Image (cartoon, rainbow, N blue to C red; front, side, top):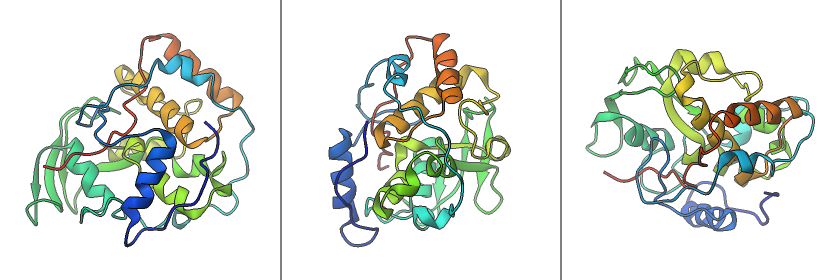
Amino acid sequence: MGRLQGRFRIPGRGFSVALAALLAVTGCQPGGKGEHGSGEGRPSGPALAAVSSLTVKGRAPRTGYERSEFGSSWVDTDDNGCGTRDDILKRDLAGARFRDGHCLVTSGTLTDDPYTGRSVRFVRGHSKVDIDHVVALSDAWQKGAQKWDRDKRVAFANDPLNLIAVDASANRGKGDGDAATWLPPHKAYRCDYVAHQVAVKKKYGVWVTRAEKDAMRRVLGRCPKTELPARSGAPQAR
């Protein structure tokens, strides 16, 4: 998929309208269902076939990359009163408890961590759970995002399709690796993980290196019926 056309407003009043415009352009609808989401969205098609649609280019320099280039961390992009981090925790944790009754997650359990397969306890302030960008922000920066406008970068950084709760130590071992340089230690999740990366890169027009594309094909070639995740993956209100 090529670059999204048009500009979207930055977080603040009416950002949900801007995000809705982004979802409309990319063909995404709220209420989808990914591995860790809820809703009635349908898979988009076989992930292996979708790999062919990704543009191949070399990795650009990391020069100029800062987390702030993708906006403030965990902004409330859907105007529901909760930051994106808490939205994903609500979606992915079992038995979530809240400080304010609906938004600020204080504890819960990641019962089947996708990266390790283990159960991981979340306690706010002492957490062993991270919210990971499946396609790392730095990786995206080196593969097209440095030329995006700020609004598209904010949408990318807060898109539930690109976010999952995972074991913190495994996530930090990943860094900004792509499919050619890092795969989850939990082998049973690798097909879904790569399918997720394909879906995100296709949606936003992030390119891949030749080695990365080959790695995607190699992983998905072992599970050719793997579907792309539902396009939204949006967390559902509880």
